[in-house]
Length: 243
Image (cartoon, rainbow, N blue to C red):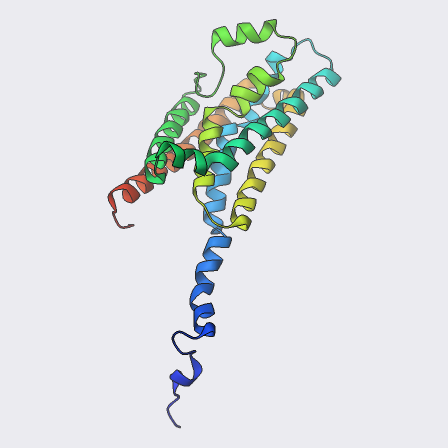
């Protein structure tokens, strides 16, 4: 058999077909983020927003309200949370650039913050990172509508969720990649809405102890992901290779 001349098969350098062939893999990477990155983003945001963990807090804040009133508070809270997270998602890259903050530095800072949040979850502590303080709860009881404060902020779209959304936006990519990440944010908010609407059933099924057990398990996952954020940030900041 004769030898195949691959030079006749491959496009010549500098030709339009060669340029298209060379740029195709890069375009795919930009447009569609790997599935593991999407799954990572989904898990982090789900753990940080914590739909199940917010159920007992929501039940306490809406005690004495009718079912219709409770549903209205939940819907308004989710809508406001979506608006807050959408603003930070869309303006995240521009905000970091305006402040002169590099992506590696923000990954280190964001990962450290999420690690502190994970510690609170593992030890079932309610701190200002993932819940309201005593003075904030007292102020909430005096308000007629709690959908803005403390439900939308800081319970749902709190510092942890905003940090996570900024990290997701900083991954970059084309419109398709960012659209997939934005769809994950919407999906997590819909799960949270379902949890708020089913608060009574969740509390009967799990109780506060069951919710704390779930929080501890999710906290371990969040701690590992947060450490990986820091490791990736250090590698990027100091130009270290992956390993």
